[in-house]
Image 1: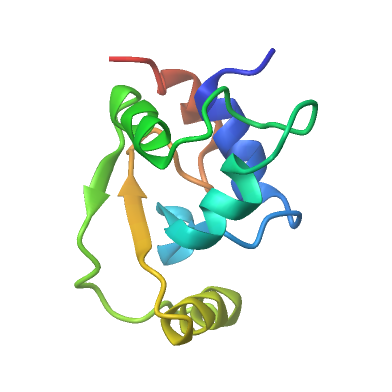
Image 2: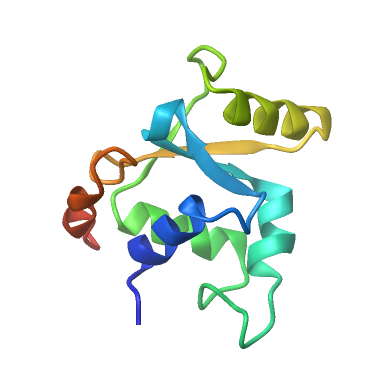
Length: 118
């Protein structure tokens, strides 16, 4: 079975999920917290993606794998899909969480193997 970072990668790359996407040109992972809880963590077996159904546990996994939460002080996203996703989320008053890991970068998939549990 896939490791946590591999599952996360497949999810961010997939068009199936509206609650998680690449931000800042593939350097960050953006998560619409409310939608993610419903769309991903709320899934029943056998469709469940992660072992947990709790946001807190999912975020703890991110931290274990070296992801750090980033404050969104940088400029609006340059790409239209990112911008629209952020606009949708903002209009829904949802919290968007941004996470960064130098080994989790859309432009450098080979780095994923460096994404190890700390």
